[in-house]
Amino acid sequence: MDAFLRCDRVVTLTARLADGTVAEDTRELLEMHLLSCPACLQHVRKAQLVRSSLAALPGRHAPEHLAALTPEPAAEGTPS
Image 1 (cartoon, helix red, strand yellow):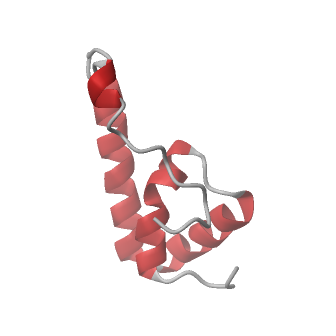
Image 2 (cartoon, helix red, strand yellow):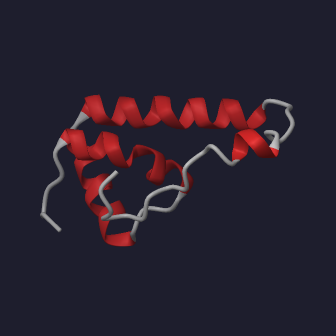
């Protein structure tokens, strides 16, 4: 993996960072990038706020016929 991540890659990995599924070496690169890029840090913070707000909403599980339409998350390193 590159020693530095570009902003577009950080944006792509934001959801994985928020849910804790990003690989350890990638997480370290993300954190290094966020220390030097206020725009990406703001993007990640907004995404985390949206995620926590949605998680706090009362709700029901999606009906099976709709849940079946949701693609499985791609494995890291797999083109999306």
